[in-house]
Length: 454
Ligand code: NGQ
Ligand code: ZN
Image 1 (cartoon, rainbow, N blue to C red):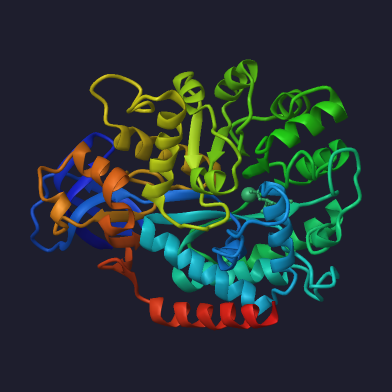
Image 2 (image 1 turned 180 degrees about the horizontal axis):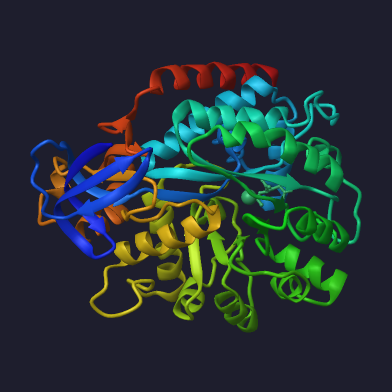
């Protein structure tokens, strides 16, 4: 048993001072505001429940900055995807592990304490399964174990190149498998995942365009429980292609043809008509928003005011990992609304409410649901995953409360983070992960190797 006391904490009952937290086996046993410090280890700063990151493709981190030069035709998501496919062609298992470890480390330093990795890089550079089919999935698990982040692994099924049984492109050779092949990856990685202190296995049909009605049904019957994540309607072209294929818009098609409920996380549910907005809010699934990547890729703006206003659930993810920041995702989410509506404090919901607090608490709940892990609040029975804000930062010297969180979201970002605890163990101290030097230099060597190949 470890007995901690935080200077301040955001508890389910609101802000509190001198918050004692008892931790056993990584899980919170008791939370007691107004604790006296005798016999307790003091953790300085303002404790927030750590944020779950509900969507990541870690390998894309190593192409950050490589797709920002204008190409010969109008650049778009689709030209970015070509660059991304070319980049991943050369990744070997050691690259995959080194990049994942660095991305996970940066997530921890930015305030994320668990991540849902949407893992679709399965095969070797020629598109052949590895001798151990789950080789690359196991590398992702090893990376999470090395840096100590909670993990929901989502082995991804990629069935086809596009709507209507389009054959896969050359760039998709490392992803494509049948349901049986994917299930061998699921079974292969299960033991490694079971050895992590806070991990979960889910499943992910990649997207409506990369799945078929038959493979979707087969995948769901082979995986009757656990999280289900899918990319939904990120690009206007996906909406048009889905209409041409089925006569229905993507989210409407999914809701009509799959048992979408609270197990589901709908990634990039960007393009929704009014009926879809209402159905999304009502279905119990989490809208998985990745506002920094969605801005970077030119996807469009999720109708957050409408869906959240109707009681919809949401969480945030870092997707391409071009910039990794828990506070930054929430800031971009709100800024998208401000820019399109020419208004301020759109997502706070009601008068007198703090935007930063509303977003942090909303994304905690939705993120925990999407990952299927016992995280998301400082409460008994949940993991002791905590991010502390640095009260020594010159911008955080005022009274502790909603304003502290608003300052972190809108002003400081990662610079607000002091310590990060996962399962009660301190993995980040004064903004730096304990393994940063080793993990960052291994990552840098891998990025240099990849650059030399290109
Ligand atoms: C992904 N990314 O899975 O990484 C996709 C691109 C694809 C986003 N949708 C790959 N942002 O769509 O095939
Ligand atoms: Zn994605």
